[in-house]
Image (cartoon, rainbow, N blue to C red; front, side, top):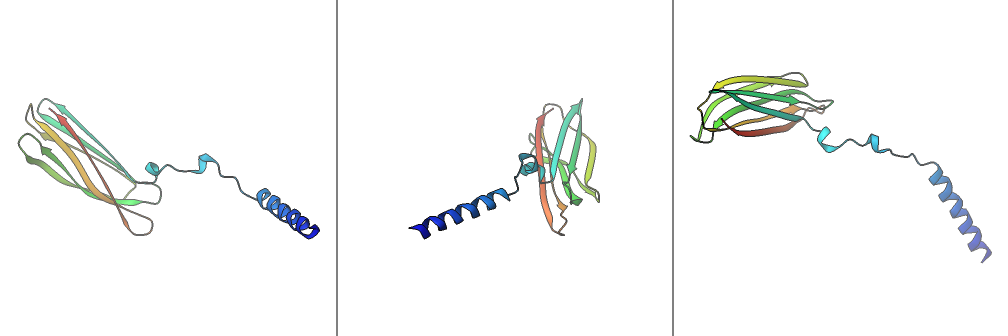
Length: 133
């Protein structure tokens, strides 16, 4: 019985020492998933019969090299009004186009592309926005 108590006491001491040497983790060190990926921001505005299409792609730390394609699609006529390529070797890319459109139609601006990771791989990024003129 005495050996059992000594063993339990020794185990308790080991646990206390182990807990005393742990490193606390603070919430500030945890990065939300949305900040770990590249992000796209699309803006579609109309002035008279001109659509202003603005696309911003931002990479996270350690990423660079943005490549992709953008398009403006007329949902009313069911056809692509314009499409163009976007590329940048940096961590941020901003592209703005002004495209003639028809009044009273609904349009979708979309972007599909990739960004380079530090490991040499590619990560897909995309986004779209739909608005009526």
